[in-house]
Length: 182
Picture 1 (tube, rainbow, N blue to C red):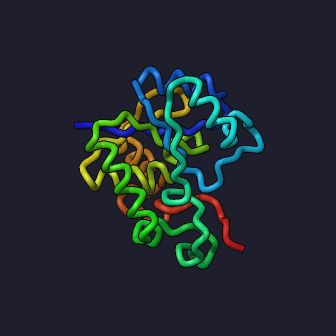
Picture 2: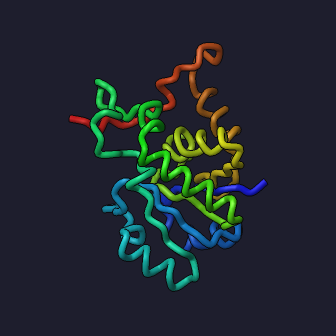
């Protein structure tokens, strides 16, 4: 089964992310940040990232407009300003982005999805994109903050186990942590 990797750049520099990608033979870095900039980590500002990936033979693909975790559409936000992933996954732009990833898998491309959040259990890479890819039968492997692999299933189990009552899973855990809507 072909897999898709995910990584969060966090406080890593580009050289560290490049090594993580090389170790997993990833040729494509798919940026799913809605806004491809980092005020804390300039290695991951879109212009610098395009230069860095091009010089190392990695193809940079921006898909934050389709798969980003902070969309512009106000309909996908809950009343408390958090992004509701159940609503977001129904949007045409999200479905189109997901289809692009499925096509990459069918073509046997070696893809890694990137966002800024270091911990996959805290990011839409696992809660939204990874969950949908898994539903499509695609193996998703998250590169965690220590550089280790974690399957989508392990990551979802971690999300559930971080909750006190394991028998009453709260669907609210499957939405954004932050409040973005004013």
